[in-house]
Image (cartoon, rainbow, N blue to C red; front, side, top):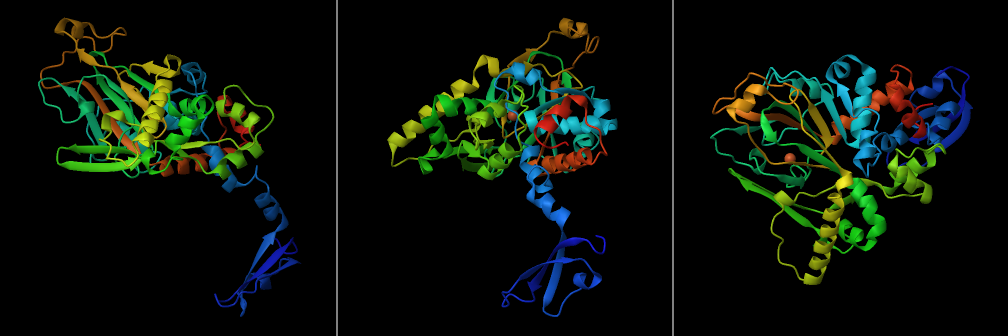
Length: 427
Ligand SMILES: [Fe+2]
C-alpha cells in the first residue's frame, strides 16, 4: 500500500458490546493502520475492492470454477480430453505437466500416469507414495496409507477386491461417513488374462437422468425424505463399518451461479456441462455420488414400502444409465501405469481375470511385457498398489497451481489454455 492511495477506512468496535462500525472514504496514512483506543481500523484500497467485487477475478470465487467437473457422457468425450495420459517423467519435472495432471483429475475425474517405475513394492519406498506425496498428504484408513491388491496363487482372500471375479461399478469406502475423494492405483504386475479396468462418469449419467427421469432423480437426491438413504457396510476381518448415504449430493447452488456468470460466450462441446449452462442460468452441479452395490447393506425395515419401491426403481434407472456402453472407458492397466480418479464421481470396476499358463508367461503379453519371467506359486500374478487422498488435499494443490498459472509463474500446456480461458481462470 502506498501513502496517498484512495480507499475506504473501516473503524471496527473494540468489543462485542460496542456495535457501531464506521466506514469513511479516505486516503491511507500511517495513523490509520495503528490501533485506535476505540477499536481498530482497516484500510481497503479501491483496486482491492474492485477485485473483490469482480466475480471473474476473485481468487475466492475461482474455487468452485477450479474443480467444476467437465462431464463426459461418452468415452469419446474422455478420450478427447486434453491430457488423459501423462508421462510420469513430465509429471515429476514439469510444473505445466503437474498443472495438467491436476486440471485433468479435477475436471474429468480421471488421469493416467505412464512409465511409473515398478521396482520398489514396499509401502515406504514405492513410487505410488512418492508420486502422490507431491500433491499432499495421503488419507490413512484401516488399509493403511498405501495398500496392495494382489492376486496370489494358492492364497486365501479376505475382501472381494482381492478375488479374481468380475467386480461391477462401485466406489471405495462408501461405508465411511466421509469416503475418500481420490484414489490412485499403480500397476506393479499384470501377468494374467483379463482383469481390465473400466470407468464411467456418474455425473454424466445423473445429467441424463435429470432430463429423462427427473422424478427419479429427485428420489435419489432425497426429496422424498429419509427413505432415500442407502446403507453400506464392511463387516469383515474384525472390522464393522456402517454408514447410510443419499445417492446424490449436489454442489451448493452458489457455485453454479458464479460459474455461469463467468462463462465466456466461446464455449466448447468438450465441456459437457456448458450445454446445460446455455439453457439454464443456474444449472445443477453435482458434488458427489454414493453408489457401491458390492458394499450395500440390507435395507432396514421401513414404514413406507411405497417409498422404498420408488427408491429401488430410481436406483435401477441410475444403474441402467451407468451401464450405457458408450459411457464406459475400459482399458487394461499395464505394468508401470498409474490411474488416479475421483472416487466420489467416477465409478470403477474390473473384469474377471485368470492366470496364464507357464508357456504363456514365457511369451509375455502382446507388447512383450513380462517376457521370460515366470510367476512362482505364492507370488502375485496381478499386483496393484493403491492409496487414497482427500479432496481438500488435491483441490488445495489445484488452487495453488492455478494461482501460479494466473500470475504467469507457470505456463500451462496449450491443451489447457482454452479451457482455462473459457472458465475465466486465465486472462
Ligand atoms: Fe474398488
